[in-house]
Amino acid sequence: MNLESTATSAEYWSDLADALNTPMMKQFLAIKKDFPDTILFFRMGDFYEMFLEDAKIASSILDIALTKRQNAVPMCGIPYHSKDNYISRLLNAGKKIAICEQSKPEEAGSKLMTRDVVRIITPGTVIEENLLSGFQNNYLAVLHLKKSLIYFAIADFSTGEVFYSSVSVTGLERLIAELEKFKPSEICVPKSEHTFFQELEYFKNREFTVLKNQIETSEKDSFQVLSKYLNEYIRETYRDNKLVLREPKILSSGKFLEMDRETIRNLELVENEKEKNNTLYSIFNFCNTAKGKRLLKQRILFPECDPVVLYSRWEKQDILLKTVLAPYITALKDFGDLERILTRFRGNHAYPRDFRSLLNSISSGIKLKEELEKVSYPFLIPIEELKKFLILSRNAYIRETIYR
Image (cartoon, rainbow, N blue to C red):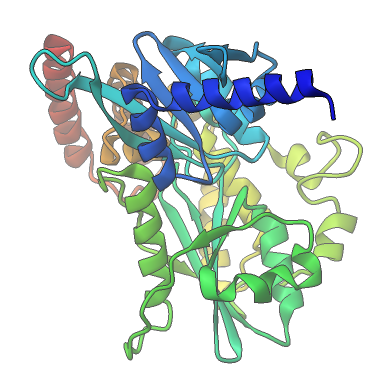
C-alpha cells in the first residue's frame, strides 16, 4: 500500500467535507437536490457558478477552465451577461439548465443571499430569441400510452402551437412518421411508461424527459391527459406558470395526405442528406416572414386533402397572380416574428425591441390590408381592429420605455 497516496486521498476528502460544510455550499446542495437532472447555474454576483459534477460536465462541453473552490470542490463559472451563448451550447448537447438567481440576504446582517430557481431551460421549452435557431420551429413531444393507443402531443413553446393525435400500438410506423416530420428536440414520457417507450426500436438511443404520472380521469376528451402533462411541464420549467399555449389542433386521419418517413426522405421534401438547398421546400421558399417559412414547411409535410380548403386557397392565389406583388412584399418585409413575440409577451419574457417590432408589424399590417382591399382579397381582421391594436401597443411601449 502506498502510504503517501493514502494520506493524500484522506486529506482531499477531509478538505472536500470542510468545503461542502460552508453555508453557501449547503445552500447549493439543498437547491441542487431538487433539480438533479439539470446543470445548476448558481448566481454569485456577476457570475453563474457551477459546482461538483455540474462543473465537470459544463467545463468539458463549454471548453472553460475547471478550478476548485477551497482546493477541493470542482467549479467553473461564466459571466451572467453572456449566459445565452453558453446555454445554447449546453442545449445543443442535450442538457437542461436550472437558472438560480440571488435576491436579498436571508437575515439582517447575513452575508448569505436568498437564492431560488426562476427558470429551467430545456431543449424543447426555449422561447428566448437568442436561443432559438432562426425561424425554425422548436418542437417538444409528449407521448402517453393508454390501453391499445398511444396519444401524443407536439408543442412549440416558442410559437404556442399545439397538435394532438393518436395511433394504435400496432401502427407505430405512423407515430414515427409524425415524429420525423416535426423532429422534436425533446420527447417527454410519463414515469410509468418510460420502460415501454425505451424498449421500442425507434427510441433505442433516445434520451427521454420523464414526467410525473398524472391521474387518469373518466373525461370523454381522450386528449385531456396530454394537456395535463403539458401544463405540468410548463409549471415546472417556467416556475411563474405564465406561459399559455394556443388551442390544440387535431391531426385527424384523412384530413392530410399521410406519408411515411421513407417517402418524406426519398422525395427530399424539406431536407436531404447532403445539403438543404436542393429540396422542394427550398425551391418554393420565397417567403418574407418567419411565420410564412414555417407555414410553407407545414403545408409541404401535411398536404391538405379537403377540396373546400384547396379551392379557397386556389381562389386567393388566382387573385394575387393577376396583380402586382411588389406592394405586398414591401409590407411583409417589415413584419416581425409575431407568433414568437406574442408568446414572449404571454410568458412575461418580452424585450423592449419586441414592442418596437410589434408596432412595426401592426403598421405594416394596416398597409397590407389597404392594398389587399383594392383587389378584393379576403383579409379576416377588420382594419379598425388593427388601428385600435396599434394605439394600445404604442401606449404600452411608451409605458415600458419610461419604467425601464
